[in-house]
Length: 131
Image 1 (cartoon, rainbow, N blue to C red):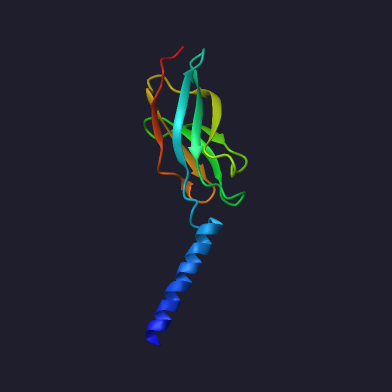
Image 2 (image 1 turned 180 degrees about the vertical axis):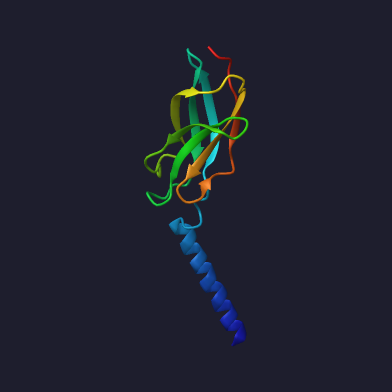
């Protein structure tokens, strides 16, 4: 009888795990930055086109922003994402006229979601020469 109870507990645990996985409760982790294109604009600003992946679940859990950070970790710009991208993965969004201080040669791009905060997979990019 004790073996039967152990087997039933394992089956119940497996069924609960499958339900959680199929509902997305465990699947959607933090967002990741996959790629970026950077363009130098006339006047010394930059434009960024950033590709992010995240298993958006809807309004309660979605990638809600990405940021440009300088070499010291100071936030130079934020691109707010105002809605989930459940059926558009990965997705790319742009931000123009980002002011980057003279002397900064590389920036880090990071994404954030509404549940976990910042993702661990960031992307460091070397800036093209100023125009």
